[in-house]
Image 1 (spheres, helix red, strand yellow):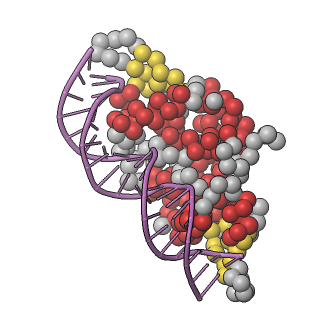
Image 2 (cartoon, helix red, strand yellow; image 1 turned 135 degrees about the vertical axis):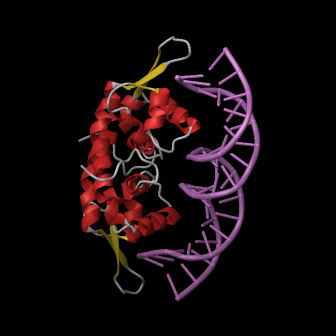
Image 3 (tube, protein in one colour; image 1 turned 60 degrees about the vertical axis):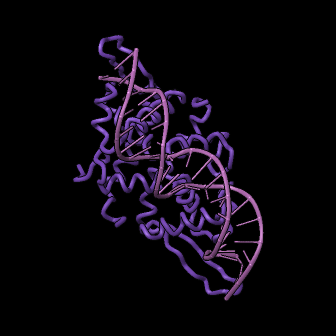
Length: 109
Length: 109
DNA sequence: CAGTATCCTATCGGATACTG
DNA sequence: CAGTATCCGATAGGATACTG
């Protein structure tokens, strides 16, 4: 039992759910599930995401301690993103969801 | 293994993920997890949801076969909503996610 | 390579009032 | 009771162009 409850407005748990429930967060976290990835690498893996949304989503995940950014200090610029331990812990729930989405896509037609 | 892949844009699996990832769908499905509920009952259970959003979310879930609407044909009007089998199947993944949200709310501060 | 900056539209979603 | 109708501001998010 947690002290929080997603049914309550303004509850931290709801805020957390909101974080998860935007168009890209789930896919990005899922995309980092296989290990660290470079920015462009990630963008190419995730079909349809724009620079703006990828950056914005990464910053948001970073500020919530789900993702870590590492500057490789190369020229030209190189940056690597990886899940934090907290991010890894989200991977389980998200994978279950993603797999459900893949398995039941036809049923929702 | 599914024939679908959430990393592909315009893939049915992505559409499904999009359905799940709006502000209210997850909470509404979760709210119907305990069994059928009346409209007002549901609205009171879910803190902060407006008539507009509850109705809209229910219609969306209904059109995707996750929720069933049953008119009780009483006066005054009475309507009951329940999860379909498909909806029930989503409950597992969603519960895992909601519990994660409740458990890690503090870590995301 | 890894972003920013800007513009622009569509939709989200809250508040409020009304109805069979 | 279970919605609908309407208005409106805020945000999401795509396209495009530019930069250290």
